[in-house]
Length: 295
Image (cartoon, helix red, strand yellow):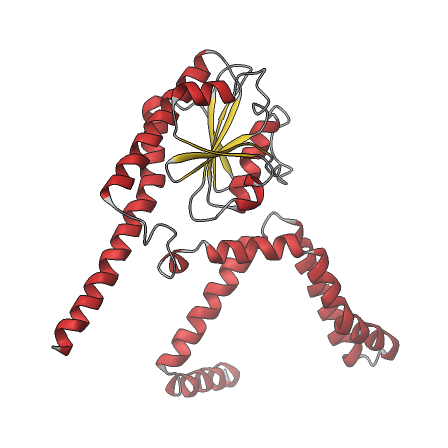
């Protein structure tokens, strides 16, 4: 009973010193740990964390039971092993930093379309989406395999360099010709940047997700791969059955029709442009407001 009383007394004494700063400190650390666990879950990095926890327990035990040799070896490991782990798990660390860069907070720092928005470009973007959807429906009817990627906030310059830069105005005949099975660029991916066909024949990274069905082909794996490392939207037309699939945020969804696909692209690609306009207007209003105050 005394133990419970003493613990409660210690708790209330601690709460008396609790400040707003402590609340935010705990909230931030909780947010970081939550997202860290969410990031490493179902990846090989989770095994790394388990291994490190075991080594930490062994390190503490080496002090408790005076295991000098074990303590010496673990000291050397923690001195130099961390650098080796950073090299080995570079892809996971890069993925984490990219996800931070694509967070909602970063969008308010620098939106790629922030200084480019105008009504004309918005209409061109809208027309581009409709044209691509019409071309995809034609490819579906002829069961012509295709992989089309809409670039968003994350730039895909590294993958554009692997293909042929076109900078062409979107049209159904051009898209159909690019993915014609005898055309030289039909095997790669087409990348849409803004409201133009920026490049074709691009090589994309394949997904590293081992849980993907064996029935999924190379195009679908490439679509998943680019959606895992960027915020791009990848659309795949199956050459076997003409099924339209979409990869977004590392998730593949299938069996799209015209309305469903058009709705998805308008809610995502056009939403980015709308968001850029909103941020731009907020900045302009803020600047004008400050000027009025100075007057």
